[in-house]
Length: 63
Image (cartoon, rainbow, N blue to C red; front, side, top):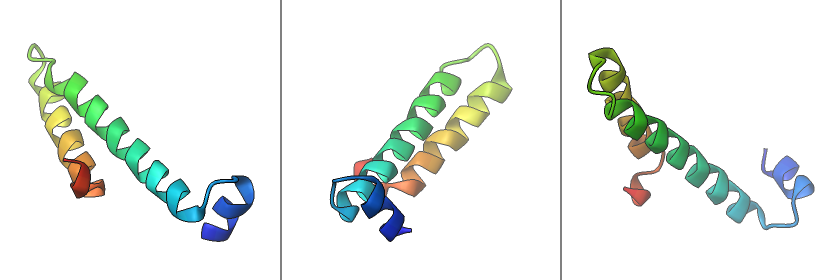
């Protein structure tokens, strides 16, 4: 996996990996925040909490 990242990008593999983890964390957190703000639909709010927790799991250093 790291070899394919290295070939696809001029960035060092570690930076590529860090960027992909960071982006995934931001994606989960953003989805979670949007859904958890949806107070009119409790199902959406619950999904939002799960997404935020998932983002924290993926990258605990950023939370």
